[in-house]
Image (tube, rainbow, N blue to C red; front, side):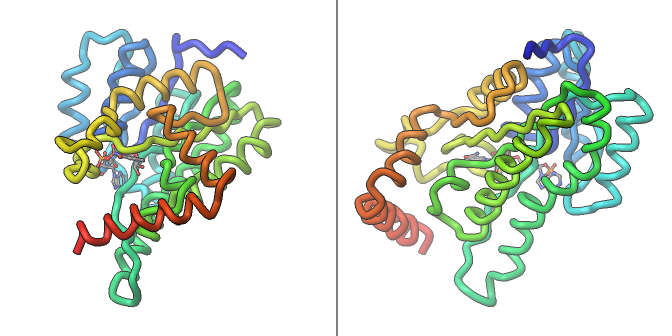
Length: 264
Ligand SMILES: NC(=O)c1ccc[n+]([C@@H]2O[C@H](COP(=O)([O-])OP(=O)(O)OC[C@H]3O[C@@H](n4cnc5c(N)ncnc54)[C@H](OP(=O)(O)O)[C@@H]3O)[C@@H](O)[C@H]2O)c1
């Protein structure tokens, strides 16, 4: 199915920095109208004015994805002002969720609320409009941490959830004309995920840029491919987990211990 940018309306959550900001720039540059969503509306307004003169335009909208009413109001605004939503990029997310016990429970629940339940809230609010705008696309920004359970358990659980949700909806929403895709970044340097342990060291080459992810999101929108990983070679780690589980667990456990020592 061909899916071009002309006249299309996209909603990008988490557009005030990092991957969401780069995606907003990429899509507005390609000619889409992008409703850019985050809590820091000053950032969104600065982004919109920076992109004045682009082929498409940016419409800032302040919303917190943990607030169901705010997300419903966002969808109502998009329906009333634009009459369509051809692409929903569920990207808003936070780190955290290092779960050791009761003292970390609130932090872990917060990570699940933003990353997983926030994605559900946005899908719920936009599903009818996406169907009415078919052929339409959803891109859920999950993570390689949603394929390999390494790092903070709450974060990994939230992203495994987004991966499972994406796989299930890619089947069940296809008949509604909505193509649901998952985009799994590896280590990308952003405000929320500065990757200071990696950049500058020998593992620095493992780290990508938000623009790399934005390019892949644009490709996923164009092609409707079910799944993409950025950088692409992270896929071999995921395959390795299934092909050689004991060896994978031995290596993963060393990586986890090293991460724990750095965090301690
Ligand atoms: N960077 C990486 O290494 C990496 C790897 C894998 C996956 N990811 C995923 O990529 C996505 C984007 O992260 P990023 O790396 O670009 O980090 P980032 O620069 O910190 O961006 C996170 C975005 O999410 C928004 N956000 C956070 N909480 C929100 C809430 N409650 N409601 C609405 N918006 C909220 C933030 O905006 P406000 O604070 O203004 O609300 C910000 O725009 C996340 O889902 C993350 O899990 C990142």
